[in-house]
Length: 262
Length: 352
Ligand SMILES: Cc1ncc(C[n+]2csc(CCOP(=O)(O)OP(=O)(O)O)c2C)c(N)n1
Ligand code: SF4
Image 1: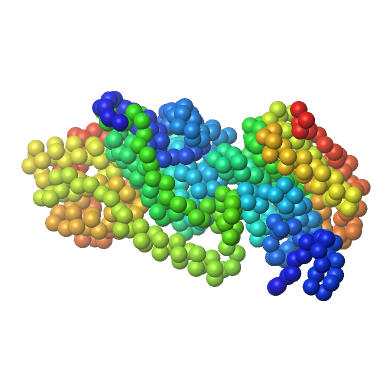
Image 2: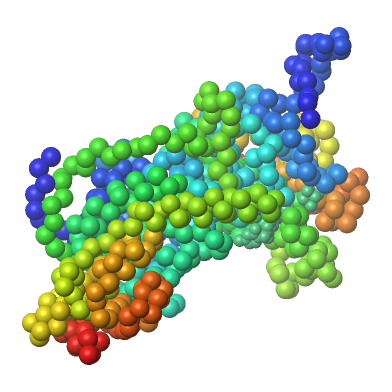
């Protein structure tokens, strides 16, 4: 596939004005994500951050195991593919050895809050100077829609077929609230990826999270509440409505910690 | 720097050997009987401007090693049996992604929580892969404190050359015992080969580097596996071994690590009783020194394998000897260490 990439403000060979472009940090590889999934949106926002802060030459990204397992195909900077849940430990290994690199992880909620919870909490507690881009879609997308620790009460998944029962599996884990008690955390924010306005807010939060690392403040995490229409059994539109009506009630958006000006 | 002869503990030697071998980063979680390794490195590494971090678990340790190795640095961890079990997924990823690193296992008794006494019951786990998938680690088995000091550097060099994890397989006795050894007070300059494949930020490089073990296409994964297997074949040329009193031996005793020390004493006792016994000591457990063993045992009447296990390396010895001579086995389990006299009795039995 050949693509001509133009910069905004320039003209294409056909004389058309370029008003929107793919970030330079992203490759030409088409996303494999389902229709209505926001992994693609979040990837793009990551790419924008790398461009905006001119980090391409010194970025090492760490991909998760989950639907974003192929993230390294979509970016043009160096990456490490971690095992399920261990991205914060892998990122710690890179960052401790190469402190002048920009090191981030990109993780789903199964990866970050289930199998990898220990690595998440300890990286945060150490104030590890890394940035975590966290996709919370309340389900295990990749393996076929099983219950996640973040699934809502009553949510039907392939392993909670009658709906999540709190007597059996407890209440959803709220990662931002959980990490808020740790002194090593420099930045924590949550935002639903449910509208252009919210995506702009997400961009703002991500900018803060990147700055935290560049300014050596410590652990930064942005949680994006995301739809998984396929495993939720909804249309993309309904999935967005579900986030705005149901998910945000359990996972309230906003900035939890911001030590940028400390 | 003049190396003075002094009393050195095995674990101390591993730690100082890692520094001398050019280790850039150490990540580990405490477990007996290897605790002196992280304890010493917690001050030695920063003193040399290198990285030391106590991880939250062995799972985290090995994944920190993975990250540091992917970024092109000489990274290591150290643990003992239960902790090594926790690292198996990570080691499989590191082998799959073809990254060099060093893992030290100061073996203790198992299964389960077992004991903190010396054991050699992790041989299978070390030399047959251990984690999932078709992969192998380079495995080095020291038998004294001087080798505990020398092997980290050798292991790092081999790991770099093959882009493969290397392991030092020691045991609780080797870790805890002290003996005189010559260890320089300041480490020599270690070699650091170029790593053009490292995922360390593009910094002008024309292409991106990705450290990865995911190969979704079955044909591509088959080809990747074939490449790994070819690499393991190539490693065979690197096998290392040691023989003592073996030239005229009628019985060859095969043992590694601390057991080889006991077996060597036993061979000398047996010779006093008129039995020509000699020692064959594999130094690389993987690649296993099969050809040298065959050659050493060519004129022997029989072999005896001695291990601190129920019989693990003996399988590789029997595969090598392939029925040419009888191969007897003597093993002790659970941290029980046989005396040279006990091993000598087995030599006498096996020689009959
Ligand atoms: C050790 C291990 N256990 C289980 C799996 C299977 N697995 C792959 S992805 C996944 C869950 C992914 O869910 P999440 O992190 O929420 O990401 P999503 O797919 O929803 O983006 C699981 C359980 C694995 N690859 N490795
Ligand atoms: S399964 Fe869900 S998370 Fe995975 S790509 Fe599809 S919509 Fe996205």
